[in-house]
Picture 1 (cartoon, rainbow, N blue to C red):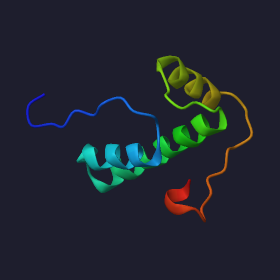
Picture 2 (tube, rainbow, N blue to C red):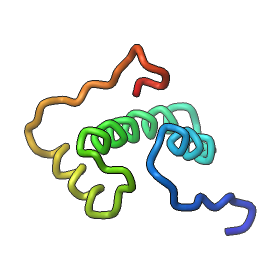
Picture 3 (cartoon, rainbow, N blue to C red):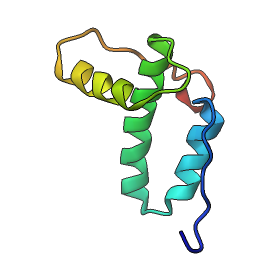
Length: 82
């Protein structure tokens, strides 16, 4: 990639999440949508005790979203809603 930073593999964390959002370089509404979906995924990985998600985890998250389930709540009082 020319002119783009390459993100190296690392444990999934709020700092990695923030770095990804900074890297997006998209409009406010697109960024807000990404933030919402990525926060849901991040909270789900914590709920499932997944530290370094792989492709199968993403498919499992998608299936979980499609199934009936109890909502995982974000902690609005915590920094970044985690």
